[in-house]
Image (cartoon, rainbow, N blue to C red; front, side, top):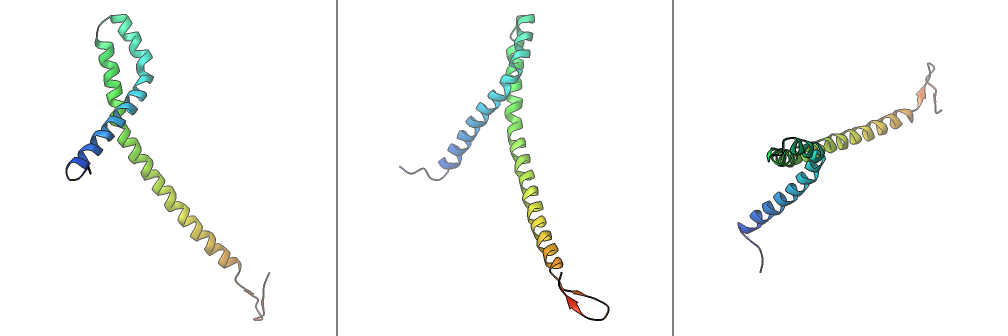
Length: 108
Protein backbone atom coordinates (compact mmCIF):
# COMPACT_ATOMS: atom_id res chain seq x y z
CA UNK A 1 0.00 0.00 0.00
CA UNK A 2 1.49 3.30 -1.05
CA UNK A 3 1.39 6.22 1.35
CA UNK A 4 -0.08 9.14 -0.54
CA UNK A 5 -2.02 12.33 -0.10
CA UNK A 6 -2.31 13.93 3.31
CA UNK A 7 -0.86 10.86 5.06
CA UNK A 8 2.69 11.41 3.76
CA UNK A 9 3.30 14.86 5.33
CA UNK A 10 1.61 13.78 8.56
CA UNK A 11 3.86 10.72 8.84
CA UNK A 12 6.92 12.79 7.99
CA UNK A 13 5.98 15.34 10.65
CA UNK A 14 5.40 12.65 13.27
CA UNK A 15 8.73 10.97 12.51
CA UNK A 16 10.50 14.33 12.62
CA UNK A 17 8.78 15.24 15.88
CA UNK A 18 9.79 11.89 17.40
CA UNK A 19 13.42 12.35 16.34
CA UNK A 20 13.46 15.90 17.70
CA UNK A 21 11.94 14.66 20.95
CA UNK A 22 14.67 12.07 21.43
CA UNK A 23 17.38 14.57 20.48
CA UNK A 24 15.90 17.01 22.97
CA UNK A 25 15.82 14.35 25.67
CA UNK A 26 19.47 13.51 24.99
CA UNK A 27 20.40 17.17 25.31
CA UNK A 28 18.18 17.45 28.38
CA UNK A 29 20.17 14.71 30.13
CA UNK A 30 22.97 17.25 30.51
CA UNK A 31 20.72 19.12 32.93
CA UNK A 32 19.76 15.98 34.80
CA UNK A 33 22.50 16.22 37.43
CA UNK A 34 21.50 19.71 38.53
CA UNK A 35 17.82 18.77 38.35
CA UNK A 36 18.43 15.70 40.50
CA UNK A 37 20.06 17.95 43.10
CA UNK A 38 16.97 20.17 43.08
CA UNK A 39 14.71 17.12 43.27
CA UNK A 40 16.66 15.63 46.20
CA UNK A 41 16.78 18.92 48.06
CA UNK A 42 13.08 19.71 47.83
CA UNK A 43 11.72 16.14 47.42
CA UNK A 44 8.92 17.36 45.18
CA UNK A 45 7.93 16.90 41.57
CA UNK A 46 9.41 20.28 40.66
CA UNK A 47 12.77 18.64 39.90
CA UNK A 48 11.23 16.45 37.23
CA UNK A 49 9.23 19.38 35.89
CA UNK A 50 12.48 21.30 35.48
CA UNK A 51 14.05 18.28 33.76
CA UNK A 52 11.10 18.00 31.39
CA UNK A 53 11.22 21.72 30.65
CA UNK A 54 14.98 21.54 30.01
CA UNK A 55 14.42 18.64 27.60
CA UNK A 56 11.59 20.54 25.91
CA UNK A 57 13.79 23.64 25.65
CA UNK A 58 16.58 21.61 24.10
CA UNK A 59 14.07 20.04 21.72
CA UNK A 60 12.77 23.45 20.72
CA UNK A 61 16.32 24.67 20.15
CA UNK A 62 17.18 21.88 17.71
CA UNK A 63 15.45 23.36 14.63
CA UNK A 64 17.11 26.71 15.33
CA UNK A 65 20.53 25.08 15.63
CA UNK A 66 19.99 23.02 12.48
CA UNK A 67 18.88 26.09 10.48
CA UNK A 68 21.82 28.11 11.82
CA UNK A 69 24.27 25.35 10.90
CA UNK A 70 22.78 25.16 7.37
CA UNK A 71 23.03 28.95 7.06
CA UNK A 72 26.68 28.93 8.13
CA UNK A 73 27.45 26.12 5.68
CA UNK A 74 25.90 28.17 2.88
CA UNK A 75 28.02 31.18 3.85
CA UNK A 76 31.19 29.07 3.93
CA UNK A 77 30.31 27.49 0.57
CA UNK A 78 29.82 30.97 -0.95
CA UNK A 79 33.10 32.20 0.52
CA UNK A 80 34.93 29.16 -0.88
CA UNK A 81 33.54 29.88 -4.36
CA UNK A 82 34.63 33.53 -4.13
CA UNK A 83 38.06 32.43 -2.92
CA UNK A 84 38.43 30.07 -5.88
CA UNK A 85 37.49 32.79 -8.35
CA UNK A 86 39.90 35.22 -6.69
CA UNK A 87 42.68 32.63 -6.89
CA UNK A 88 41.93 32.14 -10.59
CA UNK A 89 42.05 35.91 -11.15
CA UNK A 90 45.36 36.17 -9.28
CA UNK A 91 46.90 33.35 -11.33
CA UNK A 92 45.70 34.99 -14.55
CA UNK A 93 47.24 38.30 -13.48
CA UNK A 94 50.50 36.61 -12.53
CA UNK A 95 50.67 34.96 -15.97
CA UNK A 96 50.27 38.25 -17.85
CA UNK A 97 53.30 39.34 -19.85
CA UNK A 98 55.25 42.28 -18.44
CA UNK A 99 56.07 45.23 -20.70
CA UNK A 100 58.95 47.58 -19.95
CA UNK A 101 59.31 51.25 -21.00
CA UNK A 102 60.75 50.43 -24.43
CA UNK A 103 57.77 48.25 -25.33
CA UNK A 104 59.62 44.96 -25.06
CA UNK A 105 57.47 42.17 -23.62
CA UNK A 106 59.04 39.46 -21.53
CA UNK A 107 57.81 36.69 -19.23
CA UNK A 108 59.19 36.04 -15.80
